[in-house]
Image (cartoon, rainbow, N blue to C red):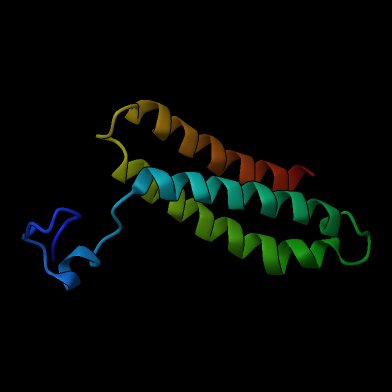
Length: 104
Protein backbone atom coordinates (compact mmCIF):
# COMPACT_ATOMS: atom_id res chain seq x y z
CA UNK A 1 0.00 0.00 0.00
CA UNK A 2 1.37 3.42 -0.89
CA UNK A 3 0.53 6.92 0.27
CA UNK A 4 -0.11 9.93 -1.98
CA UNK A 5 3.61 10.42 -2.69
CA UNK A 6 4.10 6.86 -3.90
CA UNK A 7 6.04 5.67 -0.85
CA UNK A 8 5.18 2.35 0.73
CA UNK A 9 3.34 2.75 4.04
CA UNK A 10 4.09 -0.79 5.17
CA UNK A 11 0.42 -1.70 5.56
CA UNK A 12 -1.19 -4.34 3.44
CA UNK A 13 -4.67 -3.70 2.08
CA UNK A 14 -6.31 -6.24 4.39
CA UNK A 15 -4.53 -4.91 7.49
CA UNK A 16 -5.47 -1.29 6.81
CA UNK A 17 -9.16 -2.24 6.60
CA UNK A 18 -9.08 -4.58 9.59
CA UNK A 19 -9.97 -1.86 12.08
CA UNK A 20 -11.77 1.43 12.04
CA UNK A 21 -9.32 4.31 11.71
CA UNK A 22 -11.22 7.38 12.92
CA UNK A 23 -13.18 6.73 16.12
CA UNK A 24 -13.87 10.43 16.71
CA UNK A 25 -15.50 10.79 13.30
CA UNK A 26 -17.51 7.64 13.89
CA UNK A 27 -18.68 9.06 17.24
CA UNK A 28 -19.78 12.31 15.58
CA UNK A 29 -21.70 10.45 12.88
CA UNK A 30 -23.35 8.23 15.50
CA UNK A 31 -24.48 11.23 17.55
CA UNK A 32 -26.05 12.85 14.47
CA UNK A 33 -27.85 9.63 13.49
CA UNK A 34 -28.96 9.14 17.10
CA UNK A 35 -30.43 12.64 17.35
CA UNK A 36 -32.24 12.18 14.05
CA UNK A 37 -33.60 8.85 15.29
CA UNK A 38 -34.87 10.46 18.51
CA UNK A 39 -36.49 13.27 16.51
CA UNK A 40 -38.25 10.75 14.27
CA UNK A 41 -39.34 8.52 17.11
CA UNK A 42 -40.85 11.36 19.13
CA UNK A 43 -43.56 11.75 16.50
CA UNK A 44 -44.24 8.02 16.23
CA UNK A 45 -44.27 7.25 19.94
CA UNK A 46 -46.74 10.06 20.62
CA UNK A 47 -49.50 8.01 19.02
CA UNK A 48 -51.78 6.77 21.79
CA UNK A 49 -52.58 3.45 20.11
CA UNK A 50 -49.19 2.46 18.69
CA UNK A 51 -46.74 4.40 20.87
CA UNK A 52 -45.98 1.52 23.19
CA UNK A 53 -45.35 -0.82 20.26
CA UNK A 54 -42.92 1.67 18.69
CA UNK A 55 -41.02 1.90 21.95
CA UNK A 56 -40.93 -1.85 22.53
CA UNK A 57 -40.15 -3.03 19.01
CA UNK A 58 -38.01 -0.21 17.62
CA UNK A 59 -36.71 2.07 20.33
CA UNK A 60 -35.70 -0.56 22.90
CA UNK A 61 -33.43 -2.51 20.52
CA UNK A 62 -31.98 0.73 19.15
CA UNK A 63 -31.20 1.98 22.66
CA UNK A 64 -29.53 -1.29 23.57
CA UNK A 65 -27.31 -1.21 20.49
CA UNK A 66 -26.57 2.51 20.85
CA UNK A 67 -25.65 2.09 24.52
CA UNK A 68 -23.13 -0.63 23.68
CA UNK A 69 -21.74 1.48 20.85
CA UNK A 70 -21.28 4.51 23.11
CA UNK A 71 -19.60 2.29 25.69
CA UNK A 72 -17.13 1.12 23.03
CA UNK A 73 -16.50 4.75 22.04
CA UNK A 74 -15.87 5.62 25.67
CA UNK A 75 -13.22 2.91 25.90
CA UNK A 76 -11.62 3.59 22.50
CA UNK A 77 -11.44 7.37 22.97
CA UNK A 78 -10.32 7.37 26.61
CA UNK A 79 -6.68 7.98 25.67
CA UNK A 80 -7.46 10.50 22.91
CA UNK A 81 -7.14 14.24 23.30
CA UNK A 82 -10.14 15.33 25.33
CA UNK A 83 -10.85 11.77 26.42
CA UNK A 84 -12.57 12.84 29.64
CA UNK A 85 -14.95 15.10 27.72
CA UNK A 86 -15.64 12.42 25.10
CA UNK A 87 -16.27 9.85 27.83
CA UNK A 88 -18.71 12.20 29.53
CA UNK A 89 -20.38 12.89 26.18
CA UNK A 90 -20.87 9.15 25.66
CA UNK A 91 -22.45 8.81 29.11
CA UNK A 92 -24.73 11.78 28.40
CA UNK A 93 -25.86 10.20 25.12
CA UNK A 94 -26.59 6.89 26.85
CA UNK A 95 -28.60 8.67 29.54
CA UNK A 96 -30.38 10.85 26.97
CA UNK A 97 -31.51 7.83 24.97
CA UNK A 98 -33.01 6.04 27.95
CA UNK A 99 -34.51 9.15 29.58
CA UNK A 100 -36.22 10.23 26.36
CA UNK A 101 -37.51 6.71 25.76
CA UNK A 102 -39.05 6.26 29.18
CA UNK A 103 -40.23 9.77 30.02
CA UNK A 104 -41.41 11.20 26.72
